[in-house]
Image 1 (cartoon, one colour):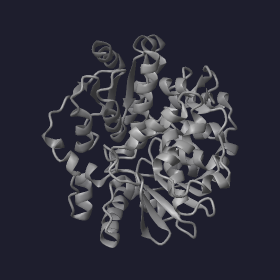
Image 2 (cartoon, one colour):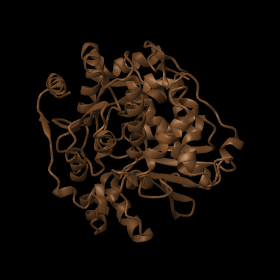
Image 3 (cartoon, one colour):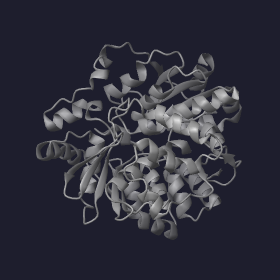
Image 4 (cartoon, one colour):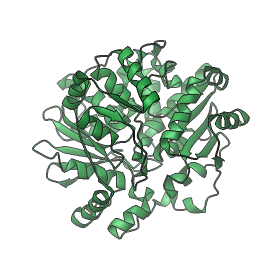
Length: 460
């Protein structure tokens, strides 16, 4: 299995190389040259298997000769051993034909754990085998950073630096990033919003001297391995509701488009998916793009669902690539337009292809809070604000086909917003009960990319 860039002007890599590289040298994102497909019999055979067994079957065709079967199964087992639910990603029914997929039973209580815990295992194995060390730099709107800290802290072959927008993540999210004491992990509080942090990361990847000097790697959802690991729970949940013998639909609260793009990959692999509904908060660039055909950035408006406060959705480039018939030159041109003017117009053919694949909707701040209130009162379910965005949008797409809404984080990660809407202050699980008693280590960054580069060079 080989991997190529969405912009068509970077070296073709193996799975291991693409995983350790992250962003392609032409600025694009890596994708497999072909998407393996499963027959209906293959998918039906997943019924009754453990999450780990389904993960092996779904991901193995993409990994080439990076791991033996035995080693890959071992890495998967280690990745999910610390999850707090035997099913890893259990389904809960909240209404006729409407289900929540609980993705918050991992170590940091968010869906990012499904990918990050596995990537941590895969990175450490591959780097030790090759006698190498890398510097991982990532941007986060909250959950990616804490999941990365948990996955990579204490590992011998990795230095990790996470950039997060100062004052724009929840207290729980911040403390999950700033309280690990291991010397190889670093939390950098950057003035600005998530897009500021993400732009700094891309600038560092595009400075090839710096990139090569510190052996830069990335674990944001620009990394294909992140997306691949998220494909698994689409299969596990759909099969539990009768796939491939009946279709299912998904609603996905998303900002950076990685989680719902994983659903697109699952559908291309043969999973019987009807609708893939994009759920956005008031920072609704993805919803606006599908409605108008114009991708136009606006200022990020802070919300009670901060992990979705994004205007530049990196993984949307992957969806555009397929919508443009795998035309890397066209994607490179549109990304140049975005960088120069903050906007681009999607071609008629491409926007039609996107609309054939994705539905969308948005939730205002009031609608998000109302969904938290309603689901607690009517169903006894306490939702985080991101999951509340999801169920609000899902309600506009319910029908005869079962709808699965991804519940992306535990409500205790956003206690103030949840309490304001429901009257209930969600408690952290017992294993995190002392989170607010732990010492924090924060590096405040008030300058630009050059200051961040200096910090990284000084600490690796």
